[in-house]
Length: 577
Ligand code: BEZ
Image (cartoon, rainbow, N blue to C red):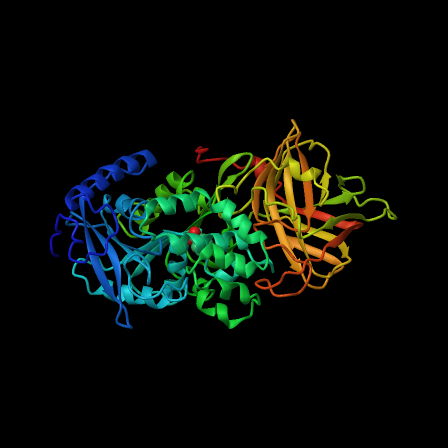
């Protein structure tokens, strides 16, 4: 093996847009010192080696080259190799979180910019080229004199998607993966409810379209004004025109995502890798957040891998998508390193006491052998007058109604959202809105642990067949403060008589003395594009028609998966962060 050079060897490429005034050697040194401090603050094992950083160009089958930074540990016994592929550049925070922390602990790391981003040639078409480009990068890896023979993949979100793309045809050298909030199916997240998830996917397109703007201050202003600009673009009609005004000439893919609503449309085939869940054999650690936009896919991945007998572990914390890189970073970095040391490096034995580690909101961390635990169905019926009860109300009560008007949609208040406004929030004001039905139960006599997906079943009619139904379960504490627990959303094109919506999965303790609340509305905007009340195409439609929703009493109920054994489960982790 050749010995590593000690400088940051990017000068011959001239592609870097970062800190040009700083000398290369100093940049490496400051990066290393900073990363060591961060590693210690995160509670990682001590850094064990120095490393150098080298710019490399990786050839693809169509003749173009993708740029990567190779972090080369200065040790004769490297722990292994990590491959990280993403569209967000190779500077901070990616360089720190997915490269330096591991290079300083003995891993070779290849941090690559995907096609069409940050100096890599070609055009960036989100998700579309990752299977082929990932495979070509592994082919290059095999030919490197320093390659340790086995590698693992790590990364969050898009950097998780690139891992699923590679796992569609797993290379024999792949030894392990750590996939944090990484979707394997873009369509499921964009159109899964039947309504276009405009906040997340217009917002993401805007960020990616402008992230390489050389005028940093403009990028900063864009980030600061993102929520306001997004709300305006989502509200104006026709939506296609207002979105394009926001995006400018960037993100040319955006309209095509909105135009392809049908889940069976082959348009999405290049952006989804469900077969990877059937093919992966190596140990996989999945990390997610209860308020993450990709949580349902993370849990689906876990279920499928576990069903197949793959060595899979799961950690879910009380985090949103963006918090996975802030509040959730210490836990995810520690667990990632432990997983790599166990399955790629030379850790004497696995340190993880149990495959599943989940944060029970309202309680704390629990280890579990698997997820979800066995539960029993607990039905709670909607009552006339806004109550909730354990039995259906007497027959004969008139339905309760609300009027939804697309001119004034119900505003998104916390919950899973790709924005700093997401997550757990005080949502008390929603219950007072005229376009929201609110049902609140009596104070709970004892703690109630709900583990899994709540389900709402509504006997529902509407005077307009084109409706959306949003449902939220909240917890109202003894002081009357209401906070979100789980959300569900579904679009209907032909009003069914029974609406059945599976809400977001949770691990939650409703505390004795608190009350369960169910909120029902006709929109949740701008997380989802509001239903304009007609079947017209989302990009061009300008006509708005309101809808009066009626919810009938009797069969209408919330079904909670209750874990009767939860309060007896010990918490061996003891770590409540
Ligand atoms: C992300 O990498 O955070 C992301 C990727 C695609 C859509 C939304 C978010």
